[in-house]
Image (cartoon, rainbow, N blue to C red):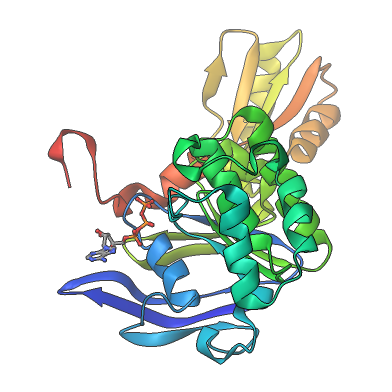
Length: 304
Ligand SMILES: Nc1ncnc2c1ncn2[C@@H]1O[C@H](COP(=O)(O)OP(=O)(O)OP(=O)(O)O)[C@@H](O)[C@H]1O
């Protein structure tokens, strides 16, 4: 488990994170979400000791990064996908890291293969595309076979095949008991990858918990109902919920804040025939916008 405790990081007078506390459980992929500049990278840098918290702490399995005996065998981080020596090949880059940390040479071929980089292993990094750079960053993070993975925008620049590959990779890692913290601006991707979420804004915690809690609660669910006698259906359902108000065309009703079970029961008791009864959950993007609406640092038109 990663534990963030009252983490505050000041850059001059600006608080990049502000008394931030949350946990990242083992065996899950935790999506780390927040608008631009909300403090995600700063938090990740504090976890791996690249930034020193002004107050509070970040612990990995109960220990500070600096206390880990073999850090790269415990935590793998992708924080800046371009942080490679441009004149080195992918293999040379991984060899330098493996040699400095005492990892066996055999692990280099293994990881090149795992990250789909075998065919460009001897190519200089300066000729790499953004996606290849991301793959090399992930390869570096995974070289020590760590239990904890911190990936900042890992799918940035990847093609659809690469995006799916990252998704499978982190899910497999979590399934084996690993701990994954992953940030992304692609909400649809996050919805398919993460099982747990941490949402921050302006350096503060907005919400955290299982992803289902965000999208499948009553407030984020709508029920759609249709039948031959819409007037009678509308009449019956208006008694059930005064918030019944949205009509999609003349043939369908969309109802907020009640379950499909309640709607079905009420219509059954009223003896009404129905042709459609379905539940739609809000998209993660809708929920994200709703949660972070007031915490957006940069808005179009210079609005703050
Ligand atoms: N080294 C630094 N010096 C000064 N300010 C910084 C530094 N690093 C980050 N900040 C500021 O701290 C705040 C949080 O930045 P951070 O990069 O952690 O956010 P983020 O959530 O990762 O953003 P993004 O989604 O755009 O990558 C921002 O206002 C940023 O400008």
